[in-house]
Length: 118
Length: 118
Image (tube, rainbow over all chains, first blue to last red; front, side):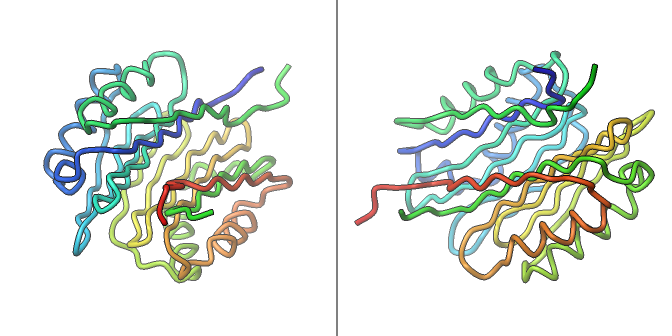
């Protein structure tokens, strides 16, 4: 199967609730996850919600990482979308699982852009 | 099922190749799709790749939209992640399918954040 992109969808549960509401920590952790996985960071956009919750995107040369947090439920949704073989996306996932203190998680991998290329 | 987020994954094929490489058009179309679907735009980050391709994120109060394009294959991957009931995410999808001139598309809906809430 010839896919252009590899998309990991992470469900993180039982996370540290304070961490999930800490924009500064989440931004630096997402950037660290991207860089340690071998991605080249091009830009980011993070937002703090009132009364709680953070959304953030990290655009990388190889696609993107995204996080949405619900501190009130200890839950975060994370996406890691990469193209090519240079980024170790599971390494980025592992960093986020650990740094957010997730008690449990699930990960779904979806192939994006399966084309009819000879 | 009590899910926090609704995540649409769109595969757009046979798109207009010039449009897929036009950052300005893609940015305005993604913003229009978000707004016409009833989302509140908080930020965006778009990048043009060399020799071709665009990646872009639109962060909305209700989560995010994302696009990655491969003009050389006429292919775009689009994500529309929303929480709550206020955003008509299928409307945003329809706008993008039409404006990118996709000859064919598929759409996958994934529930994110299914929690054990009583």
